[in-house]
Amino acid sequence: TRTFEVPRLRDRPNLFIVGVVWDGGAPSESWVLPAHVFDRFADGAPNGPRTLDLDADEAEPLGERLAVYKDRWALIAEFSKFHSTLSDPLALQVPLAMG
Image (cartoon, rainbow, N blue to C red; front, side, top):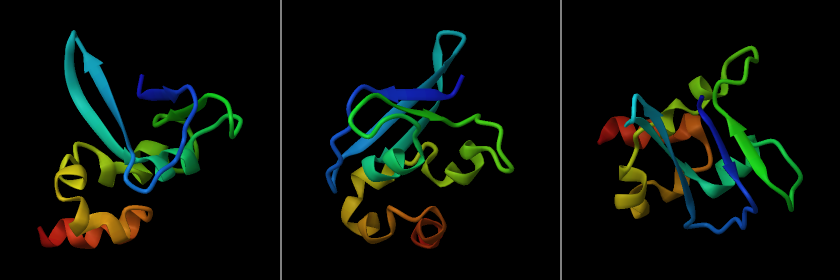
């Protein structure tokens, strides 16, 4: 499944949560999520474990809404380029498209 849990999240502007999905003993996808995005979309008590289920069945699966963070190691490697749009998945699409 594509479910990630963080025991206790302490959000900081430059903190990323990286979740790796394994398939057949090998990594198949990675999710590079700013901590505040993880926290905003995760379930659980604010000071307790936080769980992000990318396959949650809503009108639009969370994995589709957050797809801009899938396999996006550039968000860490080029943090200064993307930091102003990291919290908004739609706004982040523009600088990513521009390269």
